[in-house]
Length: 113
Length: 113
Image 1 (tube, helix red, strand yellow):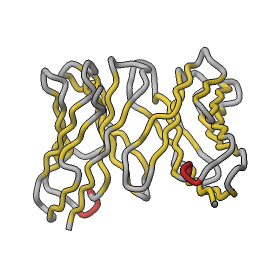
Image 2 (tube, chains in turn blue, green):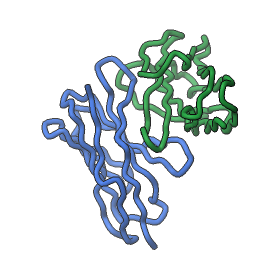
Image 3 (cartoon, chains in turn blue, brown):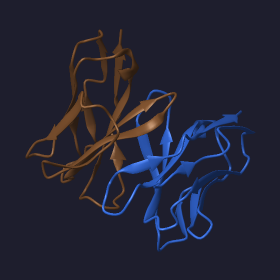
Image 4 (spheres, chains in turn blue, cyan):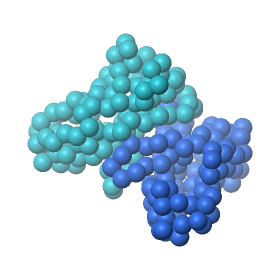
């Protein structure tokens, strides 16, 4: 059974800082891992999807990595901006052949001007 | 291409009533999943539909039900509402089942009084 953990629950950084958000999962047979962003009271915005055959995915200032052997994924945000303030969630499939995602509780990021 | 749409965006109901929420997936997507998000439990999987068939169901009581139509639009129904059903209900769509990137709608905020 897949379990996903995100630490820390909250993070506050000054504008311009590079930062890393962490995501741990228990099932190393994970097929892919998806990172999302959620603004208060809103839906989820997909940021990056990393397939198990990939080690990294990049989109603009975001870079996500996946290490199946250690059960870890990281989301790197370069040159953070106040507009990056949001809750970041990672999720992976619960089991084979399913779209059911298991989510971490998220990391609430605050970027201070 | 239009994103995932959910209606209504906000609902206020009283205990004992029933409610129906609607989700229209991205054009061409045939898989729809539903999630409940609460501050205490985070995001929890409700059900997953593909080609009008329920493929997966989460650990929710039978008061929660859903269906998918031939045009891939989906509805979920909650009968005999309880205070604890107050939550943000999110639906996600993907092209097919299995390991696809999932795209979420803005959610329906349900408040049960």
